Image (cartoon, rainbow, N blue to C red; front, side):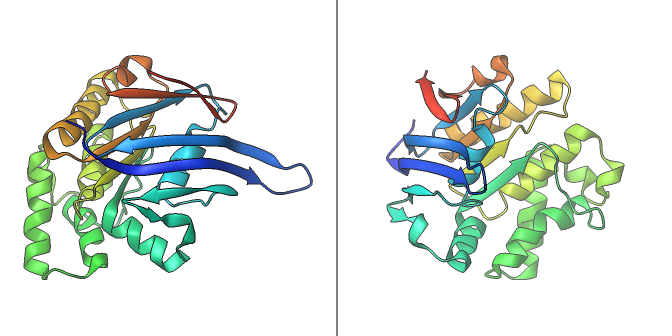
Length: 228
């Protein structure tokens, strides 16, 4: 069950400056509760990924503010935003972005090592536990090139969860997967929201998958058109 507000987006607009400025999103107001599973949908170029990157502190608004657990993230410097991403946010992308020279286990361990608050033995134990949760423990020694697309994406999700984030952001995470693996990925996200109480926001163009979420935020020309 979704709980208190985790994210508050207030009057957010993002404009790319230049000879001809481009408005990516305009006048976005949105509240996201803890434990919600949300899909951001809309046509290509509607601003879906732009909004996700703003929510994930990978970009900053030109106007407005984004609050995370009551803190105005737009007032933070780059170092503080990077620390917030590392500690509180997990990212999954269409292309898994696993480091090719590291095994599945090594990839999942990276965020915990970067956070630097746990001994190595604990990090490895937690990474193995996450891989096991997604049925990947027996592949822990394999390099990304030795895994299928669905297996790589499950490792990427495990890596996104390594620091136990309260918010998971996924940009077209099923774009390169077949229908079976795509359903499995969405089933994982739904379980994380409903059983773990983690907030999951997914950008997707696949309507049948978006229907599995608690809410659909539909964008049109950079604005919120409907919330279903």
